[in-house]
Image (cartoon, rainbow, N blue to C red):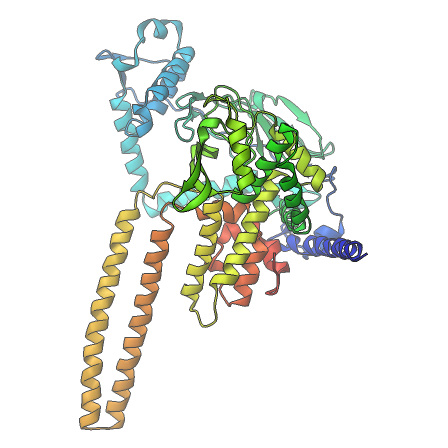
Length: 602
């Protein structure tokens, strides 16, 4: 009975929260077709989107296509085997892609070079293919130098020249950057199509160097409402297709040629539909709190099942829960060798009966999403360890660890445990729970704003480590740290000088007390205090930068952490929200900023 009442109470709460979001997300810089700001409740009184219909009317101008290729000046030439060669426009454009990257590490890699040269030759004329047969004989230096000079010219533009470019960008934004959604003006996220170039990929991607072809209108499918004005394609072209599907939120779509996957033009993250989707995502993760204990009991029972498939499923869900691993999707042979939980191979784990004074340790070492290395040594429960020994028995290193389950089947099982539950929801739940727990633990009374921000970043970092969100240290890191350390040293010297002056003021006031000497003494005391506060602030900055050198805080903050946790923390501890979220992030999470009070707990 109590469980039933809790469930009913939870349903009422979710319904109330949904209505609250509906009335608050809408207040994000929202304007109607005439450019007049609408009241925050108007958009939602017109009706919320359902699981099927997302909009009633949608009109837009279509994507913005990058400018056509502008040939090189006659005095800039490509050379082959030491001799100038006049290239056809298509071949020359692709040559410029490579030339621009000559000083980049990518162009020194064999895979990049081979893929580029193979794709380049396919685009050459028959005569060019006969003449240009080896990349090592190609000389791109003149072209490279030309673009370096062009880059310097752009950097040295006058204020007036930069203003012209700024005005042109504003004009494009005004023309292509907004759509009319249900009669209201919404911002579009990425209205500019990506220009052609060379694919880079993350890590040692097998397709690096391949040609990303120019997208033509004939490649693009337009999505708009039937009664709207259909976007006009560029002169001499036509759209691949025009459809009127109000069950999706994208405005235009095309297939990119590297992986053959669809890409989309979507609404801006601050839009009504995106905000509502965000809220639903985090509410689903919060609902997991009510189910997670029973799910954990179930996967523990699965560890001793007579069926190998069920044992493997139980251990896989345990890893997803405990380590926030991604599920891992099946990929084609030409994709980078990245894996998730279900696609782990025997070679990716090492079992240690005892390691570093801990028992039943599993050592993970594999490439995760975006070719980021996941390396972790984790003590696991004894039964999990025994199962892993069983899973790898009589297998070769390249064999699948979980050979009886797939990502699809795993997510189906999770969905049976709780509607909408996936490995990603588990990841969001654990990330948000970790942030909430860490903030509660690390934030204490009497902290300065700077100390609170350091605590917040430490809590965020705990999540980033859990989710394996890493980055390479910024190229400017050493220099920026050096400058900061110089500032700290200078501040210490200023404090020493101020203390000497304070000592002299104390002596002068003691020898000949007066109102003037008292005021001077107070002034010197305040100066020492002010400088000490400034030093502390700089030292906190130094600690924060050093700790976050190779940790990417932004990924979890944008995708896995319920923004209401951060907003409530800011309101409770009087930390300006601008210290946690930049302008773009504040727009994206405006629904959370408006609806959350300081008592919210995930």
